[in-house]
Length: 206
Image (cartoon, rainbow, N blue to C red; front, top):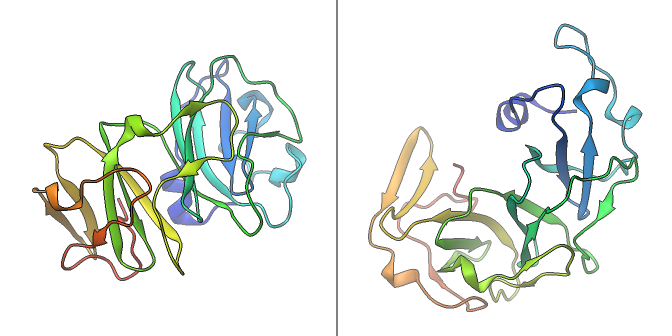
């Protein structure tokens, strides 16, 4: 079940012969055949008819399956890896565990369309930017440390090219920090204080 914002966020164009993949916050990957879903004119069915989701599970990523696409998967405890789905995914009602999460950790975001750099921000107002190539490409993992965080958690990530700069949405405005050199470092470093007028919830929101 999605709220209105999630409906927009997870809207995708699919054909009858496509497969839908989605990631949940407990580190699982699920696959659906769109042919089994009700048409757009219907009221819809409960998702539990198609997959065995735990009551605490939440969908954090949804996409049309495209072979050899890379997905960056990151957790609250700042662990992450790049997941590469090489083969056609099997349709399994129980899903497939791809992220081996530690106790009290959950997946917070899944990102495709990866670029040269990755920006990570946390709840204690620290931002770190490092090269995406520092993150391993795997088919199953417990992840590597993306940012060193003491008494806090990772809140958001963004992929970017160096010449694009960093962007975030605050209210109805898009803020743009063109010079990002100050925040560039190596994976697993602490990072530095976020730019001025950054969101209080420590999210890029775009």
